[in-house]
Amino acid sequence: MAEAFLWGAVGASALLIGALIAYVFAPGRRAIAIVMAVGTGVLIGSVAFELVDEALKTRTVGLVALFVLVGAGVFTVGDWLLDRYGAGERKDPSGAQAQGAPLAIVLGSILDGIPESFVLGLTVLQGGVSLPLLGGIILSNLPEGMASSSGLKTAG
Image 1 (tube, rainbow, N blue to C red):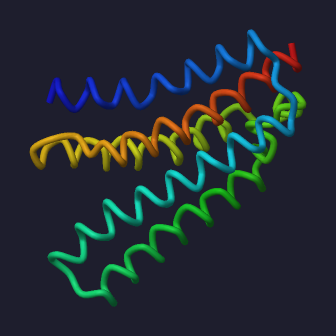
Image 2: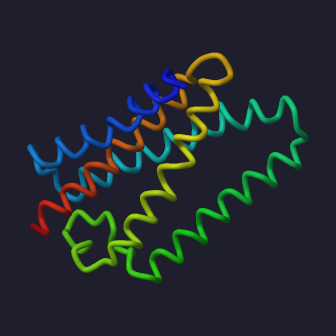
Image 3: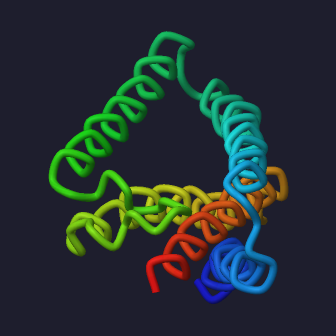
């Protein structure tokens, strides 16, 4: 369990590093958008190659596809609900999140953080951390920390 916690902390540390980068260097919206796009692509790629491939060893293609679609649907509906109830700007580099609902912002962070931590912990329980998945999490958390922190700095 300590090993899973350690690897989870390594993945989450990218949020702090991203926040520090945003605070010290104040990157523009374009730079943050580019980093976010790369991070998203890496995370989707690592999930597809690591998790879907592993699931296909024990389940049929149809069942794996169904579970991936259900997971994407839950995330999409959750994100839509959060946007509707005040968290639409929860990670806005222009500082607009100062107008958002605090509880919705917290729920958005939970919707994002719990699944990736859970999956990373499962890979540790299977005998070792998945380095591609860890890399995807780090590269997706880095721009997340940058975007939210630059917006918080702008909002004062």
